[in-house]
Amino acid sequence: MNETTPTVMDTKAIGGRSAEAAICARGITRDFKAGQSTIRVLHGIDTDIKPGEMTFVVGESGSGKTTLISIMCGILWPTDGEVKVFGTDIYKLSDAELVNFRLENIGFIFQQYNLIPSIDAAANAAVPLIAQGMRVGEAREKAKALLEKLNIGDQADKLPNQLSGGQQQRVAIARALVHEPRLVVCDEPTAALDTSSGRRVMDLLREVAVAEDRACIIVTHDNRIFDLADRILVLEDGLVTHDGTDMPDGH
Amino acid sequence: MLTGDSQKFYGLLFGIAFSTLLNTQQLTIFVNLIERGASGVYNAPEAEIWVMDPVSRTTEVNYAMPSTALDEVRSVEGVEWAVPHLRAPASVRSSTGDLEGVQIVGVDDATLIGLPERLLATNKSILSQPDTVLIDDVGIINLFESGEDPIGQRLELNDQRAIIRGVADAIPSFTSQVTLYTKYSQALNYVPGTRNRLTFVLAGVADGETAEAVAQRIEEQTGLKAETREEFAQAGVDFIIQNTGIPTNFGITVVLGFVVGVAIVGLTFSLFIRDNIKQFGALKAIGVTNLKIMRMVAAQAGLVGAIGYAFGIVGTVAFLWGFSGNPFFKGFYIPWQIPLISLGAVIIILAITGWLALRSVLSTEPAAVFR
Image (tube, rainbow over all chains, first blue to last red; front, side, top):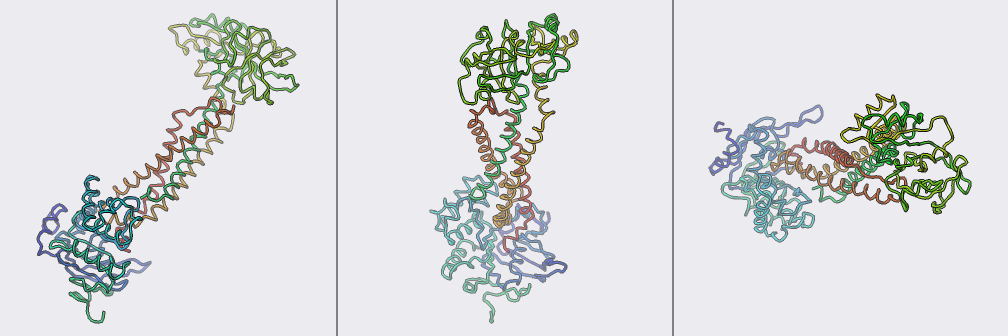
């Protein structure tokens, strides 16, 4: 392996260099087939995501923000361009290496949580650790400790359908962070919450998901929380039209 | 996931249990039913070799031999003993005037070899009394439908008097025909006269000889047909298979059980996958491999399959136990191969339906979870 394509095992070490961009995206384009025609959703995006920051990706529906973060976190192949996550050119990895890279380095918080309904909160939170090969008992203990930190330790043995929406979201946050990933990706984390609940979730995310060597990307169109961003990328029609600490005028 | 969705869990459980029940129960009835073709052999447990006219095929489909055949068989080296055995159809008139077709079995006067092993409420010596016949227990139901006690009942056979003095605990014949056991000399009187009446010679094998070798020697030296107990039992089973539509009918039912299982389980599995596709997508995004997802689903399907299979087997046992009082099911048992066949069917059902359902998961892009 050369320096631009380190192995998955090397990636934690590379990420330790905090000055390095967490994500370096260059020339990202993505086309989708729609019948006979091809629609270009992303038009050669260049951007860096820095560690230690909470970066918002905002834009209207269809602007390409979900496609962009899907590509940035290694779950959707770009039509063209390159993405380095903590120095690893993730789309030069084999399929198996890419899956393992995600497992080791990325935590996901989905809009609908997508918790497994038949296992309790602790087991849900422990999924990445179990997938990494940790013993179930040990993984549960670690997950329970994190649930304690998120103030739902007393709900650890409950099934998802026995938890409120907010509690389920905390379990989802615990699942995203339990394996201490260096990149946390959140999809509309406040979309289903009222203003105060949304801000509490964001405060919680800032507390647990933002660190000097960790990056947090949040896809949202919830303008109630824009002021909590360290950096905002605005997408319009597949292009980054704004990159700054505040929303541009007129939005 | 699967165990957490009670509707689909029970749907799968029902599909597997129903399919297992249908397959196990139908195969059990089939095997036991065709084994009735060998009931005549099983009911004469002492006989190691059955000797008969070359055209005879089963205990019921037989052709009488000259009575000299008995001495011929006795003269063959390796034959420990040989006794006459008569099996012939007759019509019986009961005391109420009813007419019923029966099978007369005449056993050796001296040794009583050819009688079923167990008699109910009597012993074999009762046959020494004049005009005595023993009736098989299933025959009681056919001959005495109103439930009166058969012991002491007088019957008329070929203008001869017969008195029922005992009940034989016998395996019913394939047609559940009434069977009357009596001494060979008495049976000759009950069966309408023909020149030859000796239908079988039952033989035992001397120490140091095998039944196969002695049977072959009998055939070579007498020109008669000689079969070991196992061969003749199999011939009875084969006769039923070749001359009835039973294998086809039961085979159709078993196939239907399999198809119904595939349909119910397949539909439920597909619904389960469809309902949880986001969860599977999330797992794939997190970094859970397809192999691990397959193993996860296989483990859950295995759990449901094992429980459903157990219910199906228990259901079959309960069915046989519940009907154990019915003469049709007398002596029915579940051969050990049948649960294994049903288990194989369950595994195939789960493998086919699981694979069909999982295809959508395996082809799902992890990015679908964000859509």
